[in-house]
Image (cartoon, rainbow, N blue to C red; front, side):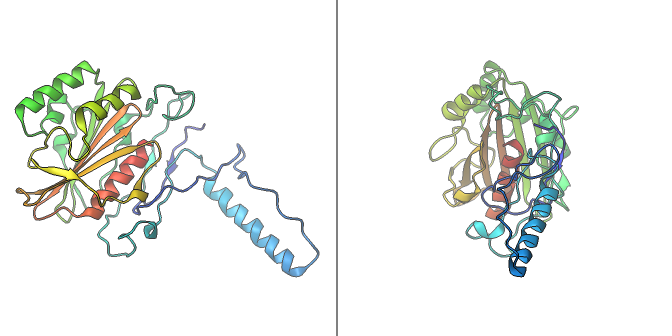
Length: 292
């Protein structure tokens, strides 16, 4: 598998992931043989159109199959119009893998480890957003205590801190911003030794069927987000989305835990008066695609 960067384009749409065209080393797509050509002008024209389509797919897939596919707006109920409130993101690129390293879900990668730089797997801020410098950390790594500050109760923070230490937390990478509409977004990626550790943390410590195990600041009562589109699932990434119950506190909080191999992610969005569903879903999906 190549480790070249592949631009994803402006990923601003939410839906199920489509199949990536497979390409050979020369950039030629693997396709079925063309149908036999008869000496008929209509057939010749059809063959020419078929050939042109092959050229288009070859150009689109020549970079590498290691990337994120585009999502069609109309595939998710409620996201079928242009004025649905989604944000405009810059071109998103998956970071290159170190030479000789497998992708996280290759058969050769039994631990499902992400070998790409975790800091480069963070979703970039949308256009017009103001960066949250408090999440930059030192050299791009956030201190554990600064991650723990997202939780409300001191006893919970102490318990989570000990849990992360016991389970061999390696790194925390984070990014945050405030969008033009006032929505505050925070994304945290926690990396451990293996996917088995992350699966255990998710199942036994962080998520629950109706609510997460630990309350975030300003969101003491949250419940499963039943309106999160099923078609927004991303292969190799599980998400557990929750929303604050009314009446809201100072800000309405939405949150989602992400599980992808050796990485446990947390996406938090909040806004006074109500955090919109579409930007939250969009952010969760795009971050999931970067991890998957």
